[in-house]
Image (cartoon, rainbow, N blue to C red):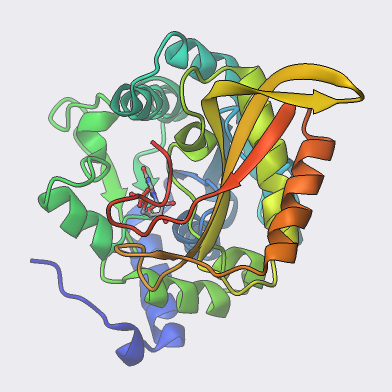
Length: 320
Ligand code: XMP
């Protein structure tokens, strides 16, 4: 059983010192590798690894093509300001090839997970020759893996690595005693900007979790633009999470006097503490109509915007 360090008992300075020392000791004069997604956990791990190893940590950002607008460049720039070099791996084609023809939500998730671990990141790790992999696993991930909710935790198996054959290969999980609140505190103490340590939740399957039906570059582009409008306009709303979803069905709209059989976007905005339950935020109607006006104006082909008014459960926060 892994011991929890509750956020209220966490001494961030001491925690950082201990984890940096532990990484230094474990890796010695070897090299390590980690994948940065731009989320809170992988960002904190990147900083800990960087403090411990400097240039001997190789940090890769895998561009899977289903990220939010401008994300790879933004994350690279943010880390450059912190003195950390991040290498972007363009794997967009591989992810879209894996998603081709899949409409079932679970199959989509599986295709993304397998492409990430077995193909793209697995290949990078094997070729890197690094003996240490830094991973941003937190205690909640372990709990959810044990409970069968998540499958992320067993990285060895997911990388297609046989620990026996790869004797000497180690996974370091410096955040494993923490939950999200603790990670945010550590991230802040490590000098991450608020836009990283206080980032709202975003799903592992990224924008593919918000595309109902086929996940193609064109359909992801639609949801990406609508997401950008949501994130810009609701930044100061205080809501827990907000997002846009592209529906599979189309509806007739009218634009410039012409009937247009166009796309439907559903928007969601949630109040929640821990994402386990959530209620739709009571946004002012004027905010909702402004969102609809902007989304239909800037996102090509969208003729309908609806607001989800269902609680979780039975809804979920994401769409797939
Ligand atoms: P749902 O949609 O299940 O989401 O109500 C609950 C919270 O978890 C996020 N989410 C994920 N996070 N990997 C993650 O790390 C995933 O596969 C994943 N799916 C959903 C979601 O954004 C929400 O905050």
